[in-house]
Length: 305
Image 1 (cartoon, rainbow, N blue to C red):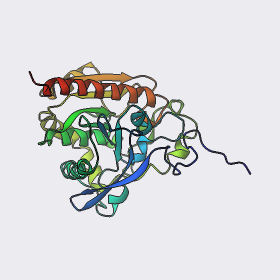
Image 2 (cartoon, one colour):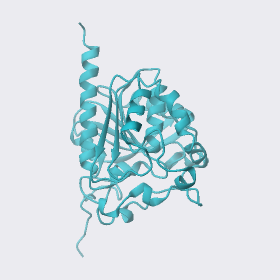
Image 3 (cartoon, rainbow, N blue to C red):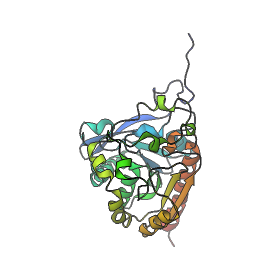
Image 4 (cartoon, rainbow, N blue to C red):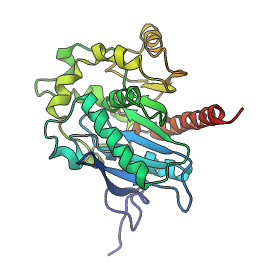
């Protein structure tokens, strides 16, 4: 009987992962954080992308299996970058250590501890760049605000703003979960079998995340005021969770006043979960292009006069 493989599941790859992607664990001050890692083939990385998933997802969000070309991990590695997609605290291997999850401040502490372990064992090239989605964007901003080591090159965040476009009652359904239509948008934006291949990615949000979810508009101004690296924010064409009109964008920029650059982009043909849709590759290429700009700016700043 012949062997049939999915287009993004090469022979020899671990089931559920793209070729060249492997599972890893990091020590986060005694807790174990799991994740997925892809490295350039036979060369040191020019930089490292740390990818942070949203609420109710896992690191596999950045290694979409429904169609060839969705994976951020394989794309980044092909461009000479190491890509580490982490399961945030309360997800993956750390779900047992943090059954109720962690607050954003606690997650930031755990993330920086995990990055200490990572940088002690892996080459990092020009530095670390956070690429985050939705709730992961909140963590990326918080981690940048807490970056006392100054090791972050910049942030690229999709599906995260500072003011919700829905009420608290509309945000969370009776079961305590975000309504699926607001998370996904029109189904035509995603390849066939997306939901079948995404079954293992979807998981309940930890309770402490759910409790802190509605507090973000109050937390954002203080966090944003301490971010001092370039920031790029992307809102999808069919984004339904966040306000991203001209007034909201202007307010976002003003609150990120200490960031040396703030870019706000729109991604056409995409729903909230951009990295699982047809627009994934276009978005990932734009995000990595922003990383290239951050690398150039960092090199220019670090160069002797």
